[in-house]
Image 1 (spheres, rainbow, N blue to C red):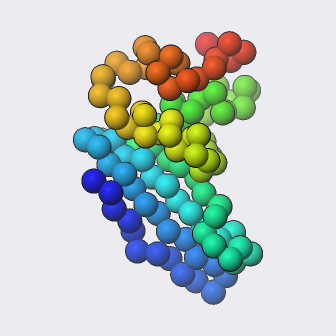
Image 2: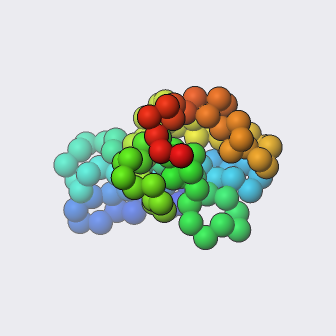
Length: 116
């Protein structure tokens, strides 16, 4: 299912959030106009959610983007790029509950220099 929340338009900018849901997983794509400084909604972030989980699982799937000293990161800002969006959608379509075992291979995560 694909859905969007109503756009938010305020005096200093606007934003919109589009969600792509598959089963219990949701990929959220949030776009804004950087407080009105851009003509289009082109600054974006991606978040990943699992139904029943309190916090987003974005830091788990995109752990390679976290700062190396932040090994217990609960929140992570993931830029909305085509590559990151494709990776998020692959995660959403990966139905195996133990996906973390194969995440590095399946999602293309490089962890050679990351702490375990």
